Amino acid sequence: MASKASSINAGPGRYQIRSCNTCKSKKTRCDKNTPCSSCASSGRTCTYPPIGQRVRRTKKTILAEMAGRIASLERSLAEATTHGNLCCNSFEPSTIADEQDSPRDLLLHKCSTGQYLNEILVTRVVGEDESIATALATSQHEQRELPSSPFNAMGIMSSPCYTQQPSAFHPGKATAIELWNIYLNNVEIILGLKLTHIPTDEVRVYSTIDEPITEKFDDLAFCYSIYFAAAVSLEDTTSLFLDKTTELQRFKLGIEQAFAHGDFFNRPTLTGLRALAIYLSAIRVYNRGKSVWILNGLVIRVAQSLGLHKDGTKLGLPPLESELRRRVWWHIITRDSRSGEDFGLEDPNDLISTSDVKLPLNINDADIFPEMEELPVERTEWTCMTFSLINVDLAKAMEKLKAGNASASTLSKEWRDKVVQEAYTKIRARLEKCNQVTPHQRLTVHCTDYLLRKLDFVTNQQWLLSQKRGVNDSVLKEETLVAALDILEARAAGNNPFLAQFSWAKKVHPQYHVTLYVLWYLCTKPQGPRVERAWRAIDSIFEQEMAFDFLGCIGAKPAVLKALRIKAETLRKNLDAPTAKTGRKTDPATSTELEHMEDPLKFLEGFNFDDEVFEDGVPWSSWTSLLHGLQADQPLFQ
Image 1 (cartoon, rainbow, N blue to C red):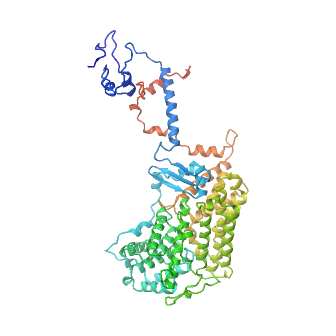
Image 2: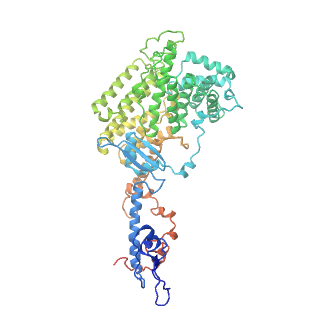
Image 3: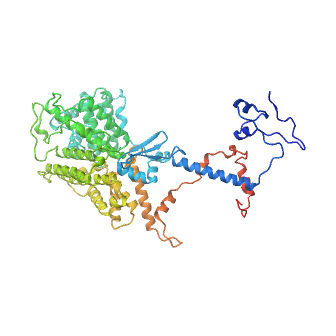
């Protein structure tokens, strides 16, 4: 039976029995029996400190021990911060790569969510600069300051509103007719692949304009998507509408309710699918968020449910329907491969390279009609499908050269050049009989030249980065900067009256790749003969193509570009700043780091020091009084 270690009460000349050594180290209550109940239950040896007067330590000894513990705590905090375990709001960049490959896959952690990147130029920039990775984690406070977008694309999943029919959103006849013509002139050729067959769709559109109440829901959705895309292409101040945004919202609601009433996702149709493809392409002017990219995947599922991933001729379909299905399928998969660029992603699927659907023919709409029994022979001159087919050729070349391909991971410079040259030769052959007098043919030549240069530039930079060479030696070269600026300046030039009607389309797919390279160059080499030219190009691109920063409506790439631009501007200001009073110039890199450094003791704000106790029983609250007792001229350690 346990007995008290001592029953002597504290008094003059007496010493109170203290807790056993085990209970003291564990900071648990000790009943001071021999053995105590805690040690007895756990099977530990129970020992007590010797009875007698407690040896008091000096303040210097206590402070020395505290300093050691603080240093240990700081090391632990630094290690935890490095591994991303300190705070839920911090990102932990994790790179996934094997020993042979250049690091390409990057996952930025934030609590239970993450941002995955695998486009090699983006991962290289983000992986080398923590401030850029941090920029991807916009704080909740900053997000609240962004306006909510009126163009949330998820509305296509809405429930039907039975108090208002979809036809209620239809505009007046004169307005609808003008919007149809605007779509044909301004939108169809540049939205992606051509999705209409004008002779048959014209009947559908005019029938809906005449009697919208009696038309089918998918025909209504088709017309609303055309009105929406046509309105997007107009200037903000237009004589057609009193308020452009209000009309866009009207057409958007019409599309959503037409889909809802027609139960489109359970009973999809080819007409409804075309409407959705047009709508999701046009809405990118106002919304390039991840929801739009995810909805592209939904569109692919709808297309597959209709069998568009199989060529219509193999399914025994009429020539006109087979040709129209080809146009829709290739539009969907080429747009999907391109839209991932907004998020630093390569095309995650291989639909372009593995599709057994034939390409659409290079023919005019008048060459094909419902009653024909076999498809016509392709034309050699420019047709309304020429630019669409050029876009497919470019997408196929990019697919071959993307870094994620098994064949591309070990490709030689000669093989890359061969793929680019083959695409160049094939595309140039499509333009041999192109007459640049008309706006559509002039647009085809202008955009093709620009897109070919971009293909060569981007794939070359991706190849160089995949070779694990020094950045300054192979990638960030002045001649490469000049090539990038030539591309951006051709893109930003808006003084051609023949192409003015297509200028709106720059906002559909902003030039993230080339802009990213130029900003990366300016952050690495902020001085040089081409710097001012580079800044003019950057300012123009941001103003023309990246003006819409709604909450949730931009991808990861714009956030990286914004952070790079801020960093480059800071470096530029530091270089232009006058000499400091000390007579020394400020180091730009050091200045940037100090300017963005947070309070290093900010992590202590959540601690309740009054409740914390050291092992020896000295509370944190004693630290202040101990410091007051320490003389400034006394050394801490002797």
